[in-house]
Image (cartoon, rainbow, N blue to C red; front, side, top):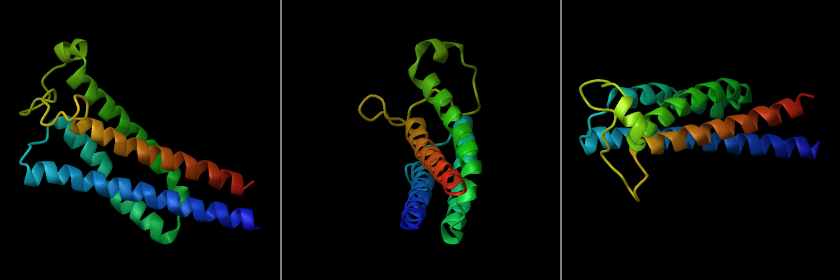
Length: 148
């Protein structure tokens, strides 16, 4: 019985970690657009559309201790990660950069920041999506194990 309590506690902490990643991602993107005045490109908007609801969804899940939400957050964060990977690729890979089409008034290939030569805004979004995806998979697997 104590093993199940430990797993429940770890799922709660992991769910909380996913929510923190979502909150930091949201405030990070708002910092870059509202304080630093970086205009988001179209792909940045898609990433925001996928990231921002996690703050509410995961926040409610943390309060209600709803671990079943992990299946849905796993899928949405996987989609968000794919958008981030594509966006990062058109920034960093010359072959994709040259063949990509214009995506709006602000070029998706532009890099407002380039810390350490590889950390860009889409890269940071990707890290947020990966953290949420990983947490969701762990919670989903632990929940399946507990229900068996």
